[in-house]
Image (cartoon, rainbow, N blue to C red):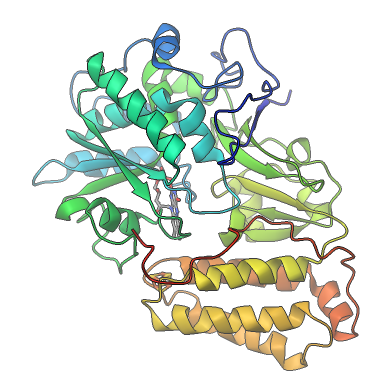
Length: 447
Ligand SMILES: Cc1cc2nc3c(=O)[nH]c(=O)nc-3n(C[C@H](O)[C@H](O)[C@H](O)COP(=O)(O)O)c2cc1C
Ligand code: SF4
């Protein structure tokens, strides 16, 4: 049986509008391994009254560390992109010496192709806020923050939710909201730590990591907001319940942002291990997996795969933050990749030479490949620059960009050949993959 529930993607213009109902809703609200777990089982956001009726008060354990064994048994991994085991971060933070750590929920979601964190914060804010509280208790912290994508309506809704919880005495630690600038890198954890400390959202070289010296110089636990919502449910229902969805190696449900070839987009809650073909309407010429730091796969190959790292990693792809996009038959994959890489080059924080100099050159070479009659040297240049920038930055921006470019060179090899002869199989020049209308070009908008 396929478990997934669909919600409309709340683009800024739509938030608060009437939403069509999600599919696959369960009358029991999704307990017992059925979906949705994180998203509401009805159209519209969950307010505090409904949340407390359904889930009760935040599931505190009464002392630090007590939750960590359950998180280990549940096998929860971070939903911010890297799929790192959450219990290891909690345990390291709880065991650390010195002043108590800071805990921040990461809802920056700078990736233009992802909307799942905005959707979660909009529809189920109290699960995220419960998760923040129980994570703080687990690591012995009373300093808690939520870092969110900049949107006035989302901010207002969260301010109300936080104030209502404070009035109801639900939160052990007060929650401070910080808005992330609209930059691709704003959610990288060292950029987050700088921004929440009052500085610009710029990544920095590690060490020290945020876990060693983060917000205001204190040890900082950064967890994606979806990870925190899962944590809140594991604290309530236990690891066995969590594992009743997903695969033994990659348990639980996850939120994914889907871009169908017909242009429709949406956020779905699905289980890890769900066939890609159950999520995207296929066939498609190619599928982008994992967003703009992710990888293209040939459509015929993606059609046979589950949405799980065990299957994707050997192919150079990963679930990441759950973006899947089916490239329509009438678009040129090279042109789409060139648009995205131009955007990624403009999003370089400009702090590291190889990234600052290399990404624009890669974007230029890819734009040439995406046009008619490229010089044969353009592909060689692209490959050379990929080798020069990978692993050479303070953050993973160059590495993620190189992953996308290398996958495009493989998957669209036949298209490169076409372009070399002055042809292109794309018949529509309409952009498919979403990008901000006007990439920010100055240095003033990192706050
Ligand atoms: C360039 C870049 C951008 C990132 N953006 C986000 C983001 O918007 N949201 C997020 O949760 N994690 C983002 N991350 C990952 C964070 O650095 C961090 O690993 C994550 O928030 C940890 O949470 P998790 O373990 O719950 O996934 C980004 C990482 C990189 C390298
Ligand atoms: S690698 Fe690039 S994006 Fe990352 S900090 Fe350095 S210049 Fe900025």
